Length: 150
Image 1: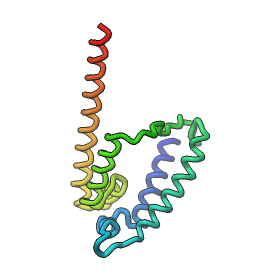
Image 2: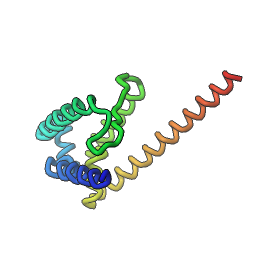
Image 3: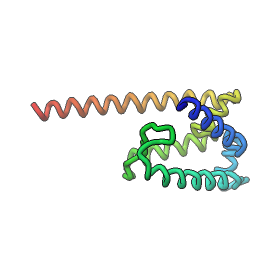
Image 4: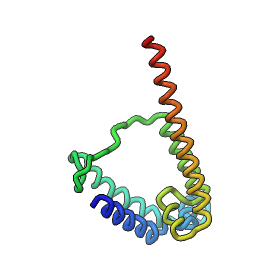
């Protein structure tokens, strides 16, 4: 049941991205071009998405499990640190250069968009670098804690 719900949610999300124009890099870059021929239409998409997410998070905050019975896993950190700011900066640069963010890039990949292939490959490399760095940091921390205990 969880797999079917995930598939349905992904299909609805993907269709929403296509209908809203978020899977079209030219439309996204037009939205980001504040000094040129600015296209404000995606602002309405974002405001709508924020509204839906705000309601969903408010409801989720008061639940311990999802509607399908799995554990509710919400972010707990509210800290704005260097890592968050650096990640946000990289995300924004990638969005501005390519006209894609992860969700729309996967939709465009499914539509056969060549630019999406390059973006998704770069995204996967970035994810791999992050995961490797996190493992290395965790191993370094454990070694340090072992030395301190000894």
